[in-house]
Image (cartoon, rainbow, N blue to C red; front, side):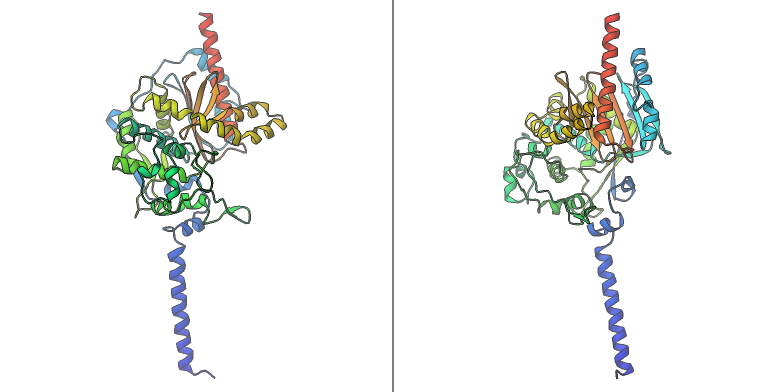
Length: 423
């Protein structure tokens, strides 16, 4: 039989093993690691705004850009007041479909500004993938400053340490989601994204710069459209390298302060240690400042972002064709269910430089779109901006919201045309 001394040694060994096991577990499964974030934070949600380390995007409180008053016509006001979605007013529809904010600006005047579920004008809203569209604007500004020569330059001219295949990947490919980056969309039990999947890696990895060295291609660049969050990671690294600044600082200097945003924003980081902004989904700002951004882009006299860049951003023709091919089956399914209006909307979708576009009489409405139905919808012809934030879709999806916003812009255009003819 074991002596007391042997039992004591075994207990000590077991205790040491348990301590080592505990240290190992918490070394891997804590919120400074990808696996820990996957375990504790689980799927992406709007609570992430308070979970990640972040940098502040400073505004200039003394230079806030005010919206106009008395600019919108009475007919436009009536259209917005009378517009119905599923027999509800815009405000009622927003309230019943998991919205946190809804703002409508026409002709640079705020015509509707409503907040829900305790949110206020100064509440930060998570833009999720609308972040990509803001990143696109920053690329355009860097181009205008001569920091980037051409969007057709290979990304390896600006970012070191990538796999050799990336010598064939251009900045344009990354901006249009046609880079050919491999997509690992593995799920556990066909439901939960695996901790090694691209979805989790691209969002929860604490060192995205290091992760980028493992990116690979699974098809040639320019062959097809595949929406993938690794693309903006490389664009974010490009911006850091050419500007010599953090993306947050560059956004503050080039847009947030000169444009006159009312509130500071914040940008989530991969980790405090590595300090890289999440370029795919990390920007958080107030809905009213997202509306200011939309109003800026409609203004043809603004010089913050070059008009030529905006035109490219709205529609890159090669990628537009690939997007049409990508969603053809979705449009057919909508049509087979009798949703002809939605089917037409899906067939009209295009994609530029991180902006979605919708054809309108030879021109385009365009919008930034993020998970849970975040929208910055811009209709230049209607001079209309719609900002919608929320924590879900209320049982719908982004295509429904985009289609409703398109229809509202159509009614504004028609009402103004009729009013002009009557005069």
